[in-house]
Length: 374
Image 1 (cartoon, rainbow, N blue to C red):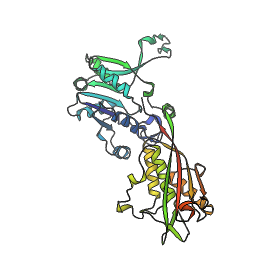
Image 2: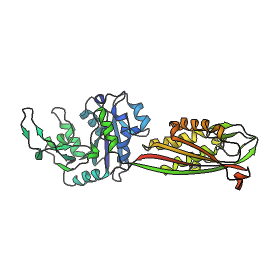
Image 3: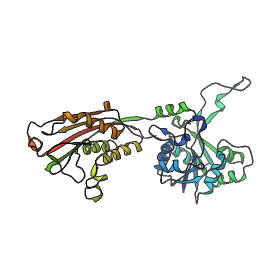
Image 4: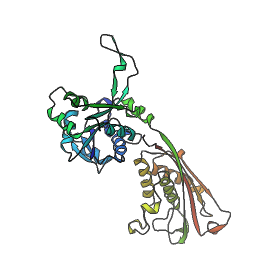
């Protein structure tokens, strides 16, 4: 059974009032579309994902999902879905999801696909808890009502037929099209995480639904002091009669910070991303290593909260350069200086640092990352 997801992301999102369509607007540090795409891409039963975007949105999609398959949608949601499913090949089951619901869960997908064993379509629903009245003020029994969400799952043949034969008014979802043609639609338990982002305030509410977790990781690095080399510490060139030896500019402080940030997202160490055996990194400025690690944190939806750096050496004295180092690290990470701690210490003339043979650095980084969706 081949299962393909169609993410509908072709709208203009005018009700949110942003400068770009809401599906590409930032939500907790990453474009909203990335959240649902990432959550659905890791589901073991889903074989492929196709994104439907609006004309002129190709650049926005490439910026957030450069490798995503896409097709251009139409003037209405129904037209966009129709164009999407027309591009699918050999799909047995099609899941249609709106990008404005950024947190689809694996448990909801499991329930939807299981329901397709007995039905042509399956939709997630939540009970209506508020009192509902008609335009005339009459109370409507809420036990007969449900709130419909996406993703919605379909047997491919049923969805294709529904779109091919539809002649009614513009539908608000695809399940009603299947039902109108006599198809069976199963209701499964929905999820409050699937609330739709429609208005400006919904972005704040959506971020509040994320299960944030705080992570801390450390990094450590050391380099030898040698004659005839520049000394770079924390992205600042410091006058000294010796410099640090290494494949790059050997900035031991930024290397330690890079490893600390990579550790917060379990992304290995600096050597994995910038191998010393690769000649392109010979003499490279280490600030790009730190920015790369920060970008990886951001790609995971993470936010850097605080970094702490301790430089260990007998000479040079770090005190006169502390503010410059603090400012440069803050600039590289996009932080205010009060979120960057820079300290220095000696080893009381013990060990290689005490003998002036090298400089060591230890760093710690604290980040907030979104928890895994259920």
